[in-house]
Length: 88
Image (cartoon, rainbow, N blue to C red; front, side):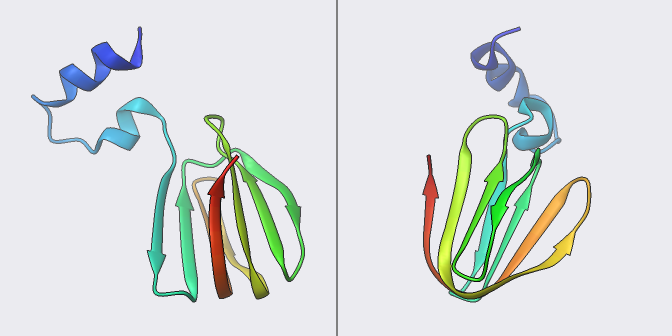
């Protein structure tokens, strides 16, 4: 089923769209914390760059002193001085 059809069906539900559409949900707290839900794993990681596969795209977080502060099957949390967030 296409995502456009699913998106129209969402209007009648109380479930968050990212759950039904299986797309990443990205939230930033200032410039020091980033949470990514619905990920597919870490591609690369060091203290200046984190690349995360989401299935839809690769999310690249750039900054200084970056650390993976929390990892589960559903959520990855990155902390440090975040300077950029890209979908590549």
